[in-house]
Image 1 (cartoon, rainbow, N blue to C red):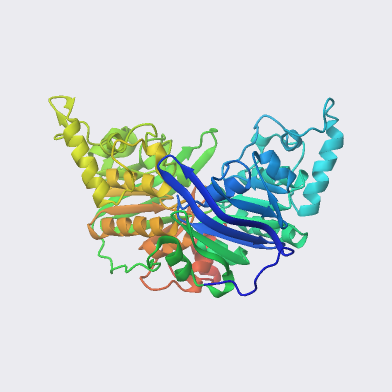
Image 2: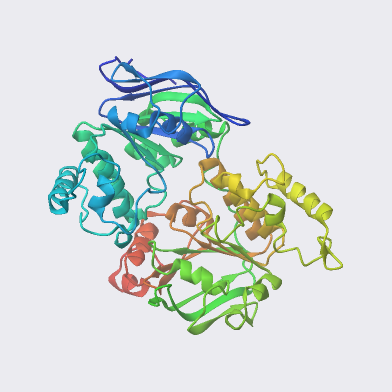
Length: 528
């Protein structure tokens, strides 16, 4: 694949040639070429660990390359710090924001600048920041404290910081990974507005659909090497991009066999629970999951999904109602009871809840087995047996790691998720709750997670899948419940074929607060 129109020095905002960046034991970028044209949105695709962020950290001045040259508007440049990159008009918005929560928007924008030097004159600078925001459609109150803002608003502050400093090239590292679905559309409008005003944008992502929707051209990295450079996004299919990313064909539509659900394994009956602020999060939510089926929970972020998973796993108290696992009331027990009775849990936060980051792969995979033989012998850990188990799971679940003594904090998101899935599935559960199991993963890792969940269904386990990805829910689930403000909006059946528009419309209406029985009365959408 080659680009159709050769660029010139006048049309290139940034040119990178032969970039080499090494870390101990890792060649992160192997003679990579990259070109960004003036006034374009350029998608940079690749799996986790492919070298995307490393390449852009070189361009942003955070890393210094071992070889290769960088040109900005045709002139060679040397960056030794992000300040050097900013002076050349290049700014990077990182996936994890670098903001001071206790300070205002304006104070965060001004941090590190030489002006103002002695006196803040905040009202004057509030007006300047507001003017930049108005120009680029970044609506945010300059006087608001960062902790008072939503994640989407905090991202706008990061953009304001770069635009206030005069950045003409904006590098956005996985900008949608932290956003709710309804915020992504707003971000895309902002990016198009910036390009219309002369900015150039590098959009780092592993989400093929988003890159196809937003980018003018696409470049792909795989294991530190370019597999495509400057390909027009309109002429490339999702399957071709996936192949360039992972080096093989990726199956997007799973072969889901007809279900044959058995007995009810999980019952959630009229559950009420509060969130961390003491406010109602679940207001009488109910569902059930049978053996041999996947049941999905759809909803816009923040409607009680996290609290639901925590109540089911006994991590959060249930104020009213009950949760039954094979007839046993989980609400009256702690988390150990669920584990001992066949429950597996893949949490939303794989770093802080799903794993112990500083412990090894071995330590993480034995967390549910360390009390049982052969891992436990006479009340003592048998580390030979633990290591043997970890090595077997490493091979079976294709966990890419140098050895099983490696701390899991060093693993990519996809490999860490495989560690968690290996631990949970190897316990042969009869029920699994998986919350956002593919969030932040690349297309190859997503395919692997989907196959593992489908294998649990075929093995006769009951699976509850809580996800904000509607396509994922419709692809995997046999039935889907919709949650809105902690209430059950309704339940719909999902066939094995491609879902029709009426079903998607029905789910969409429920996600925005219209109960299914009301939809049926008004004659809109599909039957439940």
